[in-house]
Amino acid sequence: MGERNGCRQGWQQHLIDAAATRQLGGELAALLLNEGPRLLLLQGDLGAGKTCLVQGLAQGLGITEPITSPTFALAQHYRGQRTGHDTDLVHLDLYRLEQPEAAAELFAQEEEEALALEAVLAVEWPERLSFTPGPAWQVHLLIDADGRRALVQAPDC
Image (cartoon, rainbow, N blue to C red):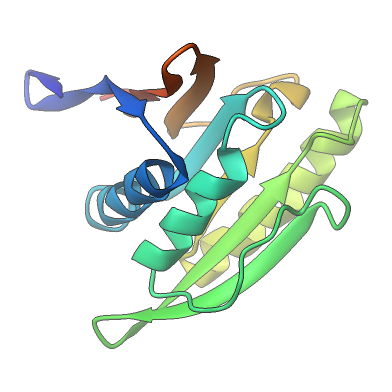
């Protein structure tokens, strides 16, 4: 992971299986909680592992209930405990929203709630928005011959 002027730039990571993807999610949970911001944008083709990564993120936040893709519900809310404090997660999936206006409206509602709860907001398919929310951590998951790769980009400093 490179740093420039005290700012974390990001990194690339090979993910050999679902366990490695969940582990990356757990590592990101610590970064989101300790360094901020608490916004994570997840891109990748269908089946690339976005929800799997969010499962690891949730584990890292101390959430014990099962994490499922919110593709049909659009948003899921979870509460966990980490070091004696509530840790909330808002998991948003914009895949089914083809109109940027509808995606932006849902994002704004869920972002407002996440901010009020001091929750982590994980957004799948942020490219459905007509803008890039930020500052945010960004993860692009790619499927290649050796499994999956994660391109992790730290927020702008």
